[in-house]
Length: 403
Figure 1: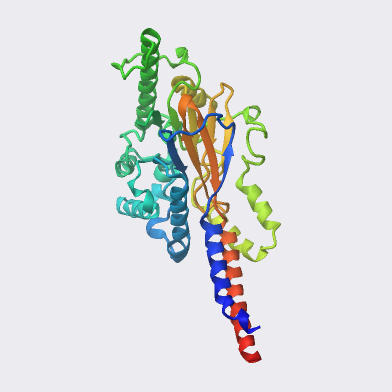
Figure 2: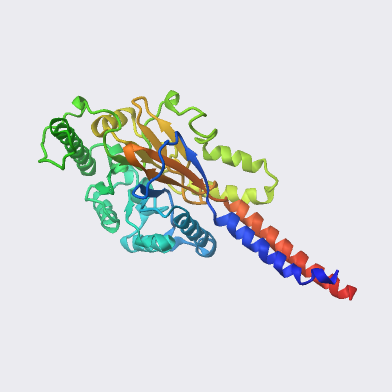
């Protein structure tokens, strides 16, 4: 039996490496219809995350020494796996951003950039979420302007339009658009009008000249209901709140993995039925605290009128949204595809995740949903490693006694 003694540390090291791999490696599944054409080196590859819910200066020891390091590992592994050209964050970087002072917001952004690590050199766009600037009752234009100035590539309205490779993006301030009469909403509407006019001008030039055109002089006449452009001919639309959905337009199981539009409550029910009841009380208390952190309706979406307005005006190629903390691949009645990006946090009590998107030729879009191990599984895995290490020590002592 003495020959086993030198192998025990090796066994423990192998277990640690296996646990590290299981924890940080993303598990990815292609969603929807997969394009038949092969990927090219000049395809645009984008990683999208949302709902980081960073506490900033309110971070405790658990966040600083446990959750943040793992979140950074998730980002690093994703970078190594996909080699993206760009990173998009679809809102809710902060957990309580609407209550923070300017100095505390800087702390949140410092925490965010520290998490990015290897992503720091990539082109970055961050959209606004309701936890960043507050819902309608908390919305303050001056405060929103301060937040906008601290985020890359956003205009005064909290919107942005940009191009990356051969792909055009339009990012809208969803929070302001859902509120009533306010200056920010008017600014967002002007952005939509401007982009709609640019889209129609390009289409006219293409129809006349038979080739794509650059941006023409802008007009003040906006008649979005007369937009005769085909669905999917516009830019990639980035939102925080999802658009209004009809149940009958959700993709069938053949196109989307079964259970792909599940809600957090379903995850909680499965957790409660598991054998790890020792941790459920802790997780439930933390999730209940999360739900009481302020105004946050996970089921909130664009109203029907605003949804039709945006789809008619912009005719988006594809829509990416967030807020619900779950992944969902959805097709609207006009054929527009919408992908909801899951939350990149353990705070919501489920597996953190991200979306990898490959924008290929002929407007083909390949979407992969990637998820990471849940917090309870991380704890269980490290408990197993701890028990294994204790077993190694006991076996080593027993072998010494045998001698």
